[in-house]
Length: 148
Image (tube, rainbow, N blue to C red; front, top):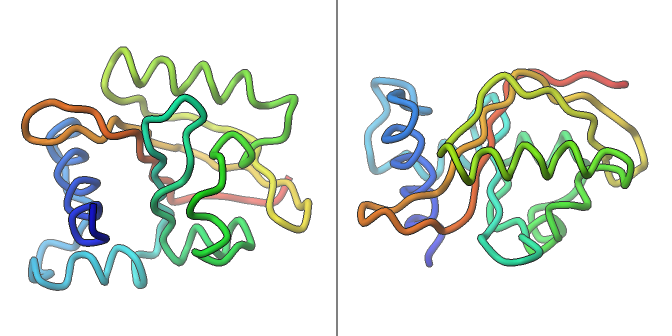
């Protein structure tokens, strides 16, 4: 899947499941992938649907939050974004999303590359469903975070 196809999947599945767009209303479709990756003032990340899911997308805002470059984040097992004691709570959220399609209002403790712990707040997580209903993983969006 190309970067543009992945971005399209993230955006379309969010709109399909949650009924709202992540994009500014006046943004041309041709600029969507670049804007979401480089200019969105909120965090968007996604992982694949494997047994030990790995990040497949992390926009610039996420990279700043987690203190990783895109090359370091993409391919990293997503479970490592939470400290070991917090992984069960994170997994329960992801299991609920798998069953229901999406979840909103989540708050969780995360860990940056430096070891800094921070809260992600009012998180929305949704399944990456294509137009045929096949699931390609899950994505998350959050607009608020603060140091723990």
